[in-house]
Structure formats: structure tokens, C-alpha cells
Length: 328
Ligand code: FRU
Image 1 (cartoon, rainbow, N blue to C red):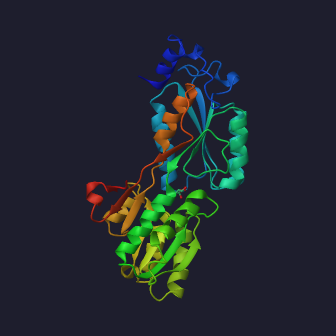
Image 2 (image 1 turned 120 degrees about the horizontal axis):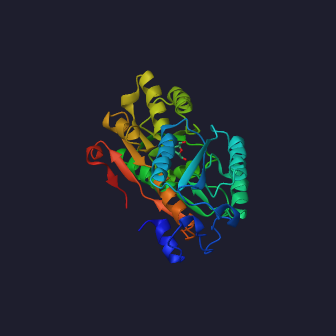
């Protein structure tokens, strides 16, 4: 049964859904004033989607996933905001969305610290808040949806140890270290490397490329200048790994090293693995579909878990034609 229909039966109003206020079961219940007439095809729930940037294919995909999932429900309307990779702009856009009287906020924040306060403000106003992919600080939001970045980093580290036979020189190109996936992918990778057990394995170069391919390319140019030998590059996302590849290729050194990335979009990272540009990539699902599922539950007055953890898969040249391999 459709989530809202189900809620209508649960709350005992089976006719016009618009007349049904969600039951006040959780602190995530939409504010009474906003929910009074909303939730019908004529007057859909208004969801604000605050996206930190649309400069990378992965974020375009996330918005597309949200849009397509929401379009299946005529009682939902989504307003999208693009902060163009600027935390201050994203803060202002969240405030604009609140002023527009949204019923629910979905946010994929650029950085944790600057977005914590506007998210908390929405939560205090009893607007349900779904934080997607990158986290904020504290717990003043309704639910967080995302994959386990420490686990993904750890898998990348273990893969590197195996691929290098426990010895070699590694470059790590980090995602924005003021964002939680960057911190977690770094931490997990180092755990997976177990450097204390592998004295011949060394991270010889480490730089923050802020998730951006052109930055990764520049940082990799520096790494290539200072390091005579590089056996493996671990980039925190596929655009970063591709930037590293372009730099290595331009220097005529791409065959010297293995390259690992994260995201595994079918038309990006997975394609790079198929073409032999990357040796491995790990799936980082966008969570767009799950965010709309959670939104429907919250708008129907149901509670959802505080944290929804999404799975991952590894794609390598051996398994890419089979759709990758699930990581338990
Ligand atoms: C896109 C992106 C992805 C990465 C995610 C982490 O902006 O950099 O490539 O997996 O953000 O939040």
C-alpha cells in the first residue's frame, strides 16, 4: 500500500488525504500550520532540496534520483537549490527555503560546521530534516542517509594492500577535509592499510583536492615531480582519480601505478574501470530514492531511523562486466 494511503487508514481518515493531519508521533512531524492543507495533488507537500553543488556528475545524479522518485508521487513537489560549492550560499538558501514554508528539508551539505546551525534551526521549527551523504555536527536533524565512508575507505585500503602485495609507495588525494566523507574515507583507508603491519608500504604524498578533478590533477603533478616512483593512487572520488590519471598520462607515467577512486557512477567510474583507466572504484550511492521514501514516511507522521546506512560494491576489471561485487 502507498505510504500516505496507509497512513490515512492508520489515522482513520480514508477520504481526502488533504484533510488528514499526520499523527504527532515523532518530533519530525511537519509543523501544524504547514501541514494543514498540504499533501494532496492539488496542494502537494513542498520539499526543499538543498544541494551543495552541481559541478560534479555524482551530484547531478543525486538530484535526478530525487526528482524521478518524487515525480512518482503527485502529492510531492520539490524545489531545488544549488549552492554552487559555497557554504555561506547554502546557509542562505536553507533560510530561503524555510521562509518559503517548506514542509520538509533534504540537504546534502557542503561542509559540516557551517551548515549545522541552519539545519538545527529547521529542526527546531519542527520541519523534518533529511541530511544526505555529508553529515552535520550534533544531532539536531531528523535522519541521516548515506553509505559508510569509513568502511568504503577501509575496503580501498585492503584492496591496495592486496594489489601491491603489501609493499609500495602510495599517493592519497583527499576529498574536502572539512566534509565528513573526506575525513571518513581517509580514516578508513589508513585502517585498511595497516601500516604498522606493512613496513614496506608508505604514503609518500597526501593532499586535499577538495573533491575536484582539476585540483586533483594539479596535486598529482606535484606528486609526480617530487616522487620518482608511485605505485598506487587512492583518490577519495572518481573525478579525483581521473584527474590523477590525466596528470600521470601527461607525464608518461600512467602505466607505472594503480589508481583507485570512489563513486562508481555507471557513466563515470564504472566506465573508467571498463576502459582500464581506473583499477578499482567503490560504489557511493546517492541516496536520492531513499530520501524520498523517508520523506513520504515522515510526511505521513511515521518515524524513521536516525541513521540509514546504504551499501557499497567494489568494481574492478575482473568483476565490472558482472556488475561489481557486493561488500558485506
Ligand atoms: C560530489 C562528491 C562525490 C563524493 C561526495 C562526497 O560532490 O564529491 O564525488 O563521493 O561528493 O560527499
